[in-house]
Length: 230
Image (cartoon, rainbow, N blue to C red; front, side, top):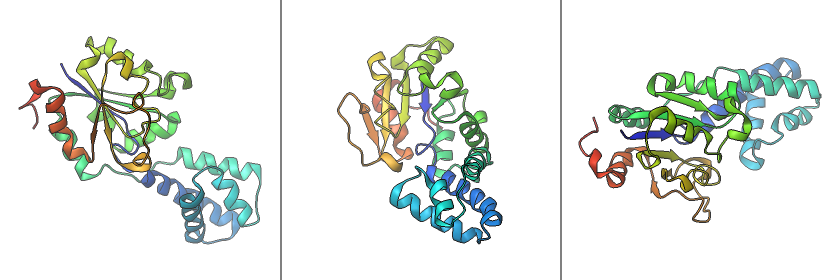
């Protein structure tokens, strides 16, 4: 048995689409609080995101529009994290997952439990995967780079680590914890981390530019899987 494990954000879809969805919800809420148009507030946050990152963006927008309070910031964070996101899997991802139906698929993703659950549900990943590991459900200490969820997967499926390949985008945390155990690793060069280069122990064994390259890369890693793709 060969098992393929995916990261979620910036691997299966563009995480900025989630951020955009959350900002629109927060801007809708703040529109009444600040007597400003939703589009004005959204645009301000979106532009700030691309100059200084997410960081304290809700604090900053409230200060910019002269209505800062810790309670309003807390409300913004809650709305952002609990909203049902308007996101979708790109057709390329859908095509890739369809090609892999003869394989056992898993998800391992970090982040707030509610946020990641809502994403996985909207993206229909619970139906597409054998199991979705949201690492924070097992304790924040078991988030990547911890190998905890990957080792649990080995027990669950009774396979060896070299029968498992993990596809992720973030070399800071995705691969360094599991490479010493012999897991196969592939880095997809997309998303916010695509320009980051790390020491070799942090980098994946292989790279792809897009998900449509995955089947041929899997054949390179596991020649015996040739012909298993739909």
